[in-house]
Structure formats: C-alpha cells, structure tokens
Length: 329
Image (tube, rainbow, N blue to C red; front, side, top):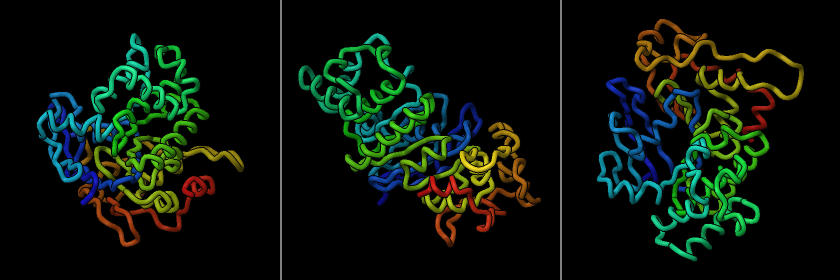
C-alpha cells in the first residue's frame, strides 16, 4: 500500500474543470517533483488533496493517506492529518507570516496545536527548530518580528513552522521562487538534509528543473491540468519523451560554450474554458498530427520505465546538453 495515493483527482471552479484526473503514488520517504508552467495545476493538486480550496471548488476523486480517504473526510479527520502528518510550505513567506507577531510565538502556535507544547517548553523547541533550519543566534532572535529577518531567513522560519509537527510528508510549493540564486541553493540543501535526517517524504512543486533535480528522486510533468510524463530524475533528464518536457529542457540557457538563442516553447498554456479537443499541447507541438487534434493520449506505463501521454514521443536519439546531463547526476 502506498504512503500517499491520488486517484483520478478532478477539480472544477464554477463549472470549469482545471484538473482532469491526476494519478500519483508517493512512497514513504520519497521526494517527488511536480513540474510545469504556471497555470498547469501543480499547486491546485495539493490544495485539493488537503481540503484547502475555497468552497466554490468542486473536487472529485480519491486521496488516500496511509489507506484513509481524505476527500470528503470530516473536518476533524482532515485536521488530524493537515499540518500534523502532512505539512505545507507556501511560496511567499512575506504573506504567510503574521507581521505583528514574533516569529517564536508563531512557531509556538504550531507546537501547541500539534504537539501540546506551551510556555518554556514551546520556546525551547522553537529555538531548536530555528537552529535546525540554520537561523544564526536563534536564542537571541526568537522574539524578533518577521520584518527583522531577510527573505531567505523568513523562508527558513516557514520551514521551521512546517517541521514543528514532525510531519511524515512535507509539501514545498515553490519555496525558492522569490529568493536569489545563492539563497535558493541554501534552501535546497536544507530541504535535502532535513528530508534525509527525518526520513520525511517531500513533494517539491516548482517550474525550476534544476531545483527539482537537486532534491527529488522522481518527477511528474504537468500540462493543462494533466500529468503528461513521469519518471525517475536520471531517466527524465537524460531522455525526456514528451515534446513538452523536451521543450522545457531546451529553454534552459547554457552557462558554458558559445552563446546561442534560447528555444522557447511557442504559445501559452490554454485557457481551461477553451481546451483543444485532443491533446492540450497539440497547438504548441511541432510533432502534432491529425490524431493529436482529435484524440487525447492517455498516461500509460512505458516499457523502458516511467509513464507518458503522447502519440509522437521524442526519439531517444535527441539527447540533452551536457549541463542538463550534469544536473541529472
């Protein structure tokens, strides 16, 4: 039995479907990357799984955590899992932290709710968590306000709050988006280290393929509310099969060698209210045929491993650049 199992998850807003049957399996302690352009449904997938979407959202399908169904579960059951067994880090710490409360108190609220700690015990644990995530001089800074920390340190405090409940699964929703390259690398190293030390599962939501390769064992690529390809990191980076996945790789600039123009994917993600009849990526795909315009490919297991939803996959001979091959190591 999988640790987390998502089956045929569908989400609609005001009658417009934005997720079209997501299927995912996550093993205990595994790190899964969820990749795709903005608007592909990465964040919505996990907000739906944890019951965090607004009331106007209509959610169908199944999300099982250790065999127990979460979709449609009573509020008390969700609260036993959400924040306690499964924690989530949101991408903007400046809007997630309360600006008028000291950071130690905010971490303490999570400790009280999920572990029953209060007073001096909660304060000591808050300091320990701040030390754990690399906040310097934590004991003397536990009573500071969020604006007295840098952006990277605020993100570390958000991670400390998520770890306060000692979760089995951590969902990191683009946690490095607003950070500079040096701080991004530090946060990625921190997430990787914490995952290993705590034997914690990780879902890393990002549009940054390099970041995903740094912390994940496996990745799933989403497009227009569907998963179009999934595989282990090494295989996906060495030989992407879906034209969309290959296009994402080609759009990454090379840091060495002669300068050349980037190769962006033409067009944009389609409006969910006006999806193409067949493959949603068809209008942007250079390999599309008449079949792609009339039929939607299913996500199917591949003989060489992984899953793919494409009628005209990229050939194995189309390999990646040296930089991407290095990222996959």
